Image (cartoon, rainbow, N blue to C red; front, top):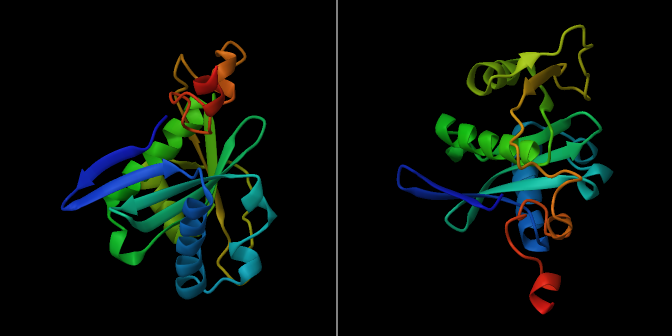
Length: 189
């Protein structure tokens, strides 16, 4: 999976898996803007040790970072977390495009299920626009002084060429999400 480029209106949008410190700084900056300023979360709620074990997704309009998400990987599912877009870029088409990128990335890794947790008003958006459904019999998640979060789930179609034990070993050494791009060790061989 490579960077995805699309054009929505007059903007040139790029969606990518974070692969360097600059992109990670951009993703964390977007999260800070949205979570501190808009949602009023504490720093411990917006950032945690999981930032070092997760895959981060960054969305750009031209060179300007406008959105970000974090994906954590568990045995049977991937969890989409900390999804945020700057106010001026909360267009339904852009949100769908970014979500599709995350879904395709998870499916390419062989995951058939993604979950997320969202405030009730945002859970409605995830359900209507992105095809999630509530996880049955799941307790609500209380996070600080925010409304309780609703657990949501979505099934994905895993492509036949998803990363697996049968994948070419070279692919496993390539940069996360850039499995079609030969790694530096391949160029020197």
